[in-house]
Length: 173
Image (cartoon, rainbow, N blue to C red; front, side, top):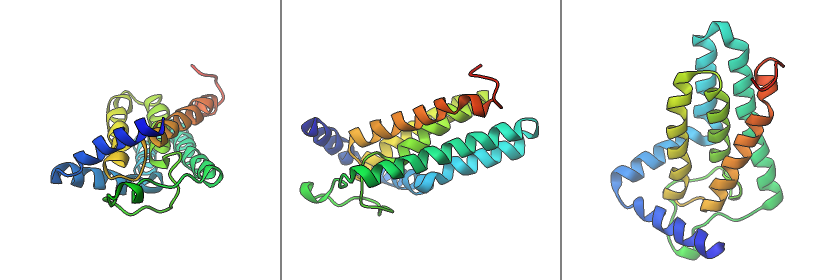
């Protein structure tokens, strides 16, 4: 598994040698720090959709909770970030030194599930943006593919488990 992680990371990290790809990946990494993009999107949804403001705020809380859960897992697992052993410097600085799971992927997947359940527009726009954010973490060289996959799974699971609460206690409908 480690060998496959290394090879996939190397291939994606090589994409960062293109200046346009590197710029985009850096921007996605920056906007996704601490789930910021997704939390702002949730507040924007709450402001724009007054009728379902409570659901948007609950979806935002689920996204933030997923991010916090990933940070807790990082403190337990303590997997070092890639970089030094490959001799390739990452394209961005990170808030922490632990890699597993990717908190960017966790909050992106949680937002995909939570916001997608609330809005047809969210269901069309959020998934490709979330996927791009997940890939950006490997392009900038700060996460292994398994970090991103685990983060996405954690985020989706967290948001899915909270679906009943998201819907105001009315079940998974």
